[in-house]
Image 1 (cartoon, helix red, strand yellow):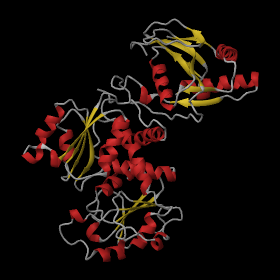
Image 2 (cartoon, chains in turn orange, brown):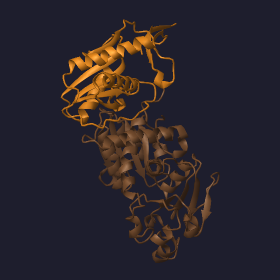
Image 3 (cartoon, chains in turn yellow, red):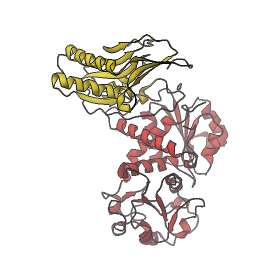
Image 4 (cartoon, chains in turn orange, blue):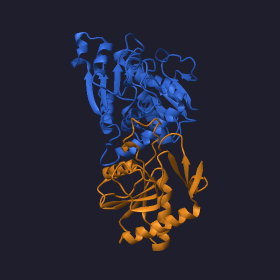
Length: 181
Length: 304
């Protein structure tokens, strides 16, 4: 059973709102850097940056981050890790880093992402954007900007599909036979 | 990914691609200020070197440390092997420490294979006799990819002592996965025939490197030569050494490689070794990233 939770327009509205919230919360945009987490967060980071450009006329710095080497489930996962590239060109030290991910679930990916960022330098601050917060946190982590809170059960699967990947856009929830993610 | 890396023959084209792309990510890590990731925290590696080695051992040790593993070095002169312990007993003893990876070099071909079959740990072959040196072949492929962007459609000349070279063998097996022309160049006494592999054989270095995109020089392994394979070192240098004028026969953008340590003035002249076309030092740097990728990908990730 696959159910659509957000359609293309819902996603666009959520991203617009998040862009405005970022502008409102951060007095200066000069020292901000949006970093998308591989692979779901990268398209979202680009979209947020383009909204901010339209509103404020400022090009934010953008980067991408692969967290494979910082995961805590290396010995547990059955699948072969596919390591993607990280591309962070700006100096991290002293910057306000805004991490962008598609789904916030256990919080472990964000923990890994924060550790990865810390190894690149000492940011002034790290904030977090997620399109969907599905609950079930296993670590004390929360998002600063949330597209939509979606209560889920552990045997459900949340997929964020974006047009940039050449698929029909939307956020979908499916009942999976296996437990969890 | 599989449990061990003993031979290039055991791995598929997909696995080679996976190692090379993961190595690219590790190379980016090595450019940072903090060149270490917590990927394998809590894991233990033992480097079991039964044959003297400085560069390969250093490369492995640094790669292991940058993955946050704990590293134990076990070398022959200081070990119980000299007290008469069998190979299998040595491995069992090491295994009892709860080791996750064993990196092994041995002067006898086949030892890593034997050990891999007798331990739960992941075994990495760091060179066995005249058989194979798979991590060197993978770092060579990575280094070529860095310069040529693809491994397909290249003319790769492997020049010199193929007979004693485990590097050459692993490279032959590796590049046979790609649509490249592999040329073996050297005196007939040092170039054996490889059945089941599509290779081109050349007895004259001028013919062998003509138009080549990659010129891979091999070290003359005097320590493994028990009989006369060529009359004299001077004659070898004259007939088979790579110098600037011979290199002009290769493609204009050809790269020159050497697994090290080099015998300057014998298989390679100093001006070539230090030229812009030489990527010998980059091979060393790349070796670190490739060995990190191999250890990271081996073992615990495979479907049980």
